[in-house]
Length: 186
Image 1 (cartoon, rainbow, N blue to C red):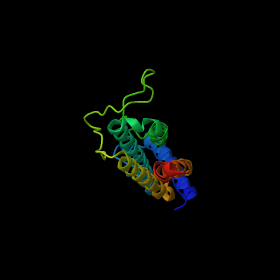
Image 2 (cartoon, helix red, strand yellow):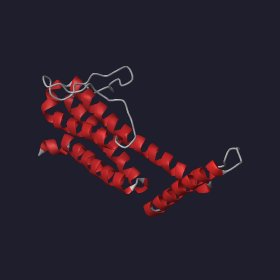
Image 3 (tube, helix red, strand yellow):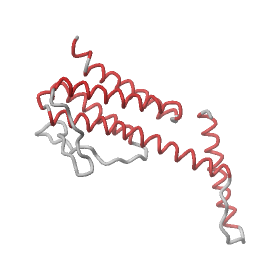
Image 4 (cartoon, rainbow, N blue to C red):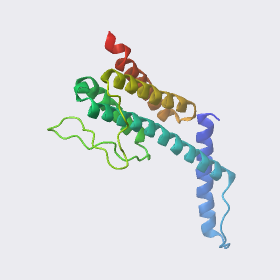
């Protein structure tokens, strides 16, 4: 189903719902109304989009947690990872806008400490990190590529505006994967 078809179907479903609500006000029948096929389809599309957005923001939050874990385990990598982590945080925030809510991964930044420092809560424990900094960077690069793959896989079913955002974030994730490994050799 194309985006245009989905939008037309969603619009038709909303119009039908509004008409049914108005008709229900004037009806003498107090019984429950059965939803129309258009309303059911509109609800299905809305649920699918919400699930897609949740998967996307979860992938970005997971990557952000990996950055936090790497920074906590290897503070010497901060000059190299801080700007990449900041980008990952911005991507997670942008993907979560529009109704998807996810608990913050870290404490807010303070002027004295600069970027947010990893302070996991009980529900957001940091993942394990390799003891070797190079191995930690390789693992982080792999995590960036995995997040990029999740975003890329969501493109065909995403609404147009969100698909553009996903494509941009996927490209940034692939670039981060490169910068964390091959880009460091250049």
